[in-house]
Image (cartoon, rainbow, N blue to C red):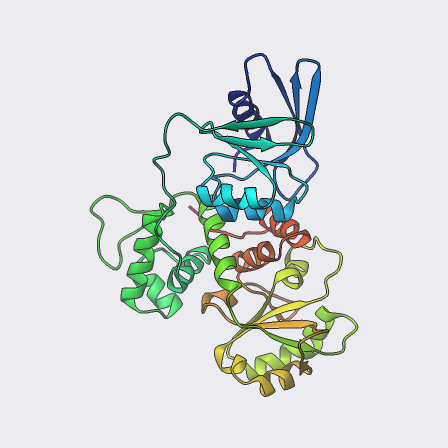
Amino acid sequence: MPGAMDLSLSIRNAMSAVLPPGVRVEVEHGTTKAVPTFILLIHAGTGLHQFLAGWSGEGWPADVERLIAAAPQVEVVFGRRLSRGAKDWLSSHHRGWVDESGDANVNLRTGLVIFREARVPHLEKESPVRWTQTMIAAAEAVLAGVPPTVEAVEQATGISRGASNNALARLEELKLLERPEGSRGPRSARRVVDPDTFLDQYASAAASLGRKKRVIKLHRLWNDPLEAFQFEIASALNNTAKSWAITGAAASALVAPYLSNFTVVELYVDDDLFSNRDQLADTLGGKVVDRGYLIEVRALPTRISAQGPIVHGIHVALLARVYADLLAVGGRSAEAAHYLRENADVGPRS
């Protein structure tokens, strides 16, 4: 991700490009740590317009949703080239936008109104490639340090050779992976094009697909959730489940503490235990409820999802998965996600 100074210049240039000549633009750094935010001051004649702006990166819908979740006070979103889906989302959520292509739609209470369409039509379309569960599995393998070859991904994830090949090919189509010209075969070497972009797109896709998964909610008594997992629940899960891992805020509290407290523990378990609700409740020492729950349980998305560190005997999910799950919750959890990214090896390596 570009540095704050680079982004400040990008925002100033983008804003100046959609304003009449002679209008002065000042950019100051915002105070939000989780995402890049900036205070803009627009000097138009004797008038002054001040607002909070945020940088959304490439400008896909997931990018702007993640930005607003982490910094809901942002009034205008900037990006390289905001997609049509992102613009529609921002409009429906009463946010303005400006991008580096010269497009802008801003209507602030201060009286600042800007509507511009770039003269050059957009040639770039949103990618037709839709993330699938096998792509998530392949991406998590790469994030876990598995070489991005068909053979290695097949062995690590348990998906078929054909599915591994197709998943890696789709990640190439998204320009997340690349390989030398002419390189072919199940052992052919690929490389991550840009680690930050790879993690961003994986996290958006994982969060989107994760929201559609079934969840079992349980209540149990405890004074401290992490102590309960360390001294009671972990051993029960080790005896019952083939694989399991906590994720979300509880996981981040073990690896890169940022949130001072949390209420719900998010837990992944293997399909066999997840399919048996009575055994699951007995293993966790709780009962299934609709309200007042303290544990959210989901089936492990992939075999790799559980391959994170073990801290105090507690299995933590793959840190990239923890990062994605925190972003999916938004708000303070999104801030914890960015803190995790800055202070832990979330991956991948180029």
